[in-house]
Amino acid sequence: MFALPRIYSGTFMPILLTHAAQLLTLRAPNAGEGPRRGAQMRELGIVEDGAVLIANGKIAAVGATDDVARQLPPERAGLQEIDCRGKVVLPGFVDSHTHPAFTAPRLVDFEKRIAGASYEEVAEAGGGIRSSLRGVREASTADLAQHVLHALRQMSVQGTTTVEAKSGYGLSLEAEIKSLEAIREASRQWRGTLVATLLGAHVVPPEYRGNPDEYVRLLCEELIPQVAERELATYVDVFCERGAFRPEHTQLIFRAAAGHKLGIRAHVCQLTAANLVPLLPFHPASLDHMDFVRDDDLPLLAASNTVATLLPAANYFLGLSTFPPARRLIDSGVAVALATDYNPGTAPTPSMPFVLSAACTQMKMLPAEAITAATYNGARALQLQHRKGSLQVGKDADLAIFDVEDYRELAYWFGVNRCSRTIAMGRSL
Ligand SMILES: [Zn+2]
Image 1 (cartoon, rainbow, N blue to C red):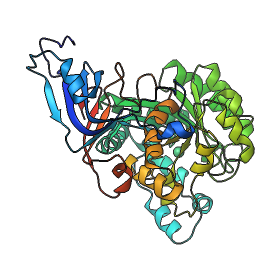
Image 2: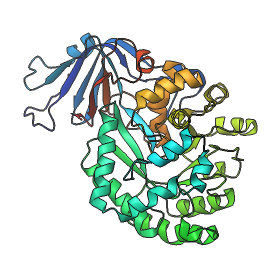
Image 3: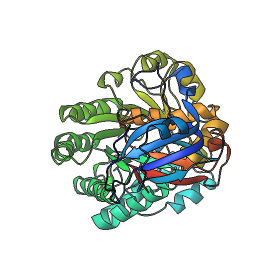
């Protein structure tokens, strides 16, 4: 029997969700703590007529409604009950790759691309990432924080409760630190969980064009130490790609990050194939995009705990006919996560349900695989699997309630928001 708090304050009022048509616990008894791979990605741990008891921001009980009800004291005054009949309840989405620290949409790029310009041609014409620099460099921290907060709220109404947020549109010591301060400020005003990442190595800024070595030195010797010292980020990310940072630069930046006890992740294989062999010894939590991953690297990835985070919304928005090779990766035993890549240039969407739709229709992931990729494996990509990504006693009470009766509908409907309620750390968002 649970001892419920006798006095229920607004913050700690226990919540009981009952009668969910399908409760997706994402429990996989034989999977262990590692990321889910292969057939494990299809195990959603579904409980029909399911219930979840939430107390003090944590999950206190999970199971069939009858079983959970039997464990409660008869006196239930102050317990908030939410009837989930006809609904699917699942762990809140973990959007493990976003770039929300920007100030304006990139509408000129949008039109240029429609007229036929490539990603690199847009950048050459002064568009692309560099065109977001001015807005961020001129913005105040408070203004930038409002933009980040606006994005977080748009994400959470569609079921997202944990977000990884990158800097990367400042690209100077001051503007990158300001971006991370804005992310921190926004996280204080949002009930979900935010993980900050320093993406100082997004592209080489105009001041260092022709001298990328000097910019990498600034990152390694000044920016990374300051960010670590002030605990402004958990991860360091690098855009390792033709026209951005070479593998040798990426290794230098990874080494500096590891030296300051920061986690490591990277954008790789988005436009061209990269050799992952020099990067994997750094144990990146995640390698993201992976459109052009080499066959030789698949067994190495499958043998590691590095998650491949796929971002199909970018392919959709760029109007590409090819998408990340999810089937090749999953069938090779590589752990796959899905994220929005929310950003002003290539993926202006806050919607994880849209990403599920794209994953199923364009990358041939099964709906169950896409849900695992967007919850448990997303948590694994942020090394938060002990707190997030599944509905188990003791984990954070992060849940999304969808107005559908079957989990496959999460990926089936698109262009409409079926999320009826999001709960983060035990409180409605
Ligand atoms: Zn990105």
